[in-house]
Image 1: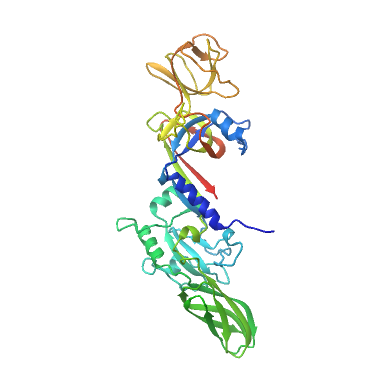
Image 2: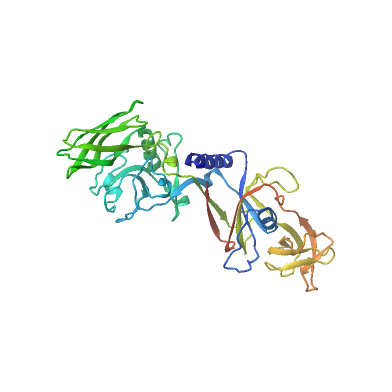
Length: 452
């Protein structure tokens, strides 16, 4: 027995995930692990088990930032058009490996095209030149370049999307649900024009499956479809008595399947098949057309986010995505924009606590690892606890200082619990990285691509 999971399933899974982000459920980017890996340049491998994402990550969690609806996009592989490339293939509705091939490209002008028909050699004419002014003709269906490549203009990346989501490996893709309106960027208005003008059931390419023999002139090409398709007109090319190609002159519309027949020309035996565009037509749904079943996330962490929740003067080595973590001490899903995951000790000032120092309470025996320390009238020490330190709680009866080095400890004045309940919510993504250092004047942009 053989079976496959279709691209429609993958697209639906991606759609349901993004819809969940945009719903009443809250997803957070979490950062963690200030302590080094055993081999600092080779992060440990994360595992899909309870200890890895439920215990170990949470013991080292630092801070959370809410992921908003503007922080995600559908994404597809970025296939950059390069003059002389020979690995561009034409779209073929029967190609079982099409999704793993380069059948669409993006140019340096951030225009995206599908290859409807590949030439016999490399692509040497930039699609931007071949198509010309895309805003004038949103549905070009003839090769204007002369290198044998037929390109279908899909869209131009909106400048904002390009800046935020375009990477060396992935390009952002969106299908516009409604007209973006006259105030939108030219790119979005042009894309809406393409979507609105897409032709369902069009035939852009007819492949010769058998060239036949004995043709002295080009035979007539007839395209028939009993399901309502109409209007496709094509011309055959003959060489040496054999049909070597078919040029589609008029793409037609409404074809769900098509039968290709050849007549006349003095020969026999030629056969062919039509390549029919996707449902709705090329450009009607770019997300499906380009197999954009990846979701790209871009979350920016600016300084300490103004709330002091994101630590500075510290590094982190883990990223996670957590769905519906709770507010501390409750079962209420968090809604705050940012949250600290650390216990905060307010202590008497005058002690030089440093990041990653192990501190100890002289009365409780509690131990913790310093995340950050700030000093004003009082001192403020953020700490984490893990299996190495134990989980004994600090109290206001404690004085604290570096573990194992008695003297000059400072009294704990207030113990403030974290803002997020440890081990709550669902961890749906975990990534281990080399150290990323945070500073008070630094902005980090975290880009994650999820595959469905």
